[in-house]
Image (cartoon, rainbow, N blue to C red):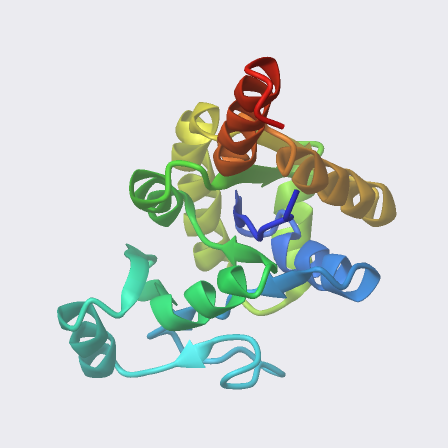
Length: 211
C-alpha cells in the first residue's frame, strides 16, 4: 500500500502554542512539510519572510485571491491570512503530510474543498494559562491581549467541527500525541479507497479462479 501524504489542518487559540508545537514536530519527524502562510500583518521581532510567513501588501494578497492562487484565506484581527496553493500540492504529490497552521475560518474552508483533510484543534490546559502565555509573549498591549481572548471565546464555539482536540500542556507529550494521531489517520478506509478497491478486485479474481 502506497502511503500518500495527507492534508493536516492545525488550528487553536492564539497563544495556545501552535507554532512551537509545529516546530517541534518538524524537528522530531521527517515526514512533514509545514505550509507557509501568506499574511498582510507586519512581521514580529525575529520573524523572516519566506520562513515564518510570506509577508505581502494587501494589494498583492488580493491579486493572489483574484488569480485563485490560495487554498483558503480569511481576515483575522484586521489582516489577511491565506495558504498558497502551489506549495501544498507539490508536497502532497511527493508523499509528505502537509501541515496547515490556520485559524478556524480557513480550516472550515479547507474541509469544504478537501473533505479528507484531518482537522486538529490545539488547546491550552486552562483559560488562565492561555492568558498567561499571551502576556508572556511580550509582543502585544493589554488591549490586544483582550481582543485575542475575546476571539478565543468566539472560536471555542466551533471546536466540534474538528476531528481531534490536542491539549498542549507538556510539549514533548503533545508532540508525540500529534504525530500518533496523524499516522493513525493514514489507515482510515476513506484515505485508502484505491487500495481497498484493488483488494476487492483481486479477491473476486481469486474466487473465480482467475489468479
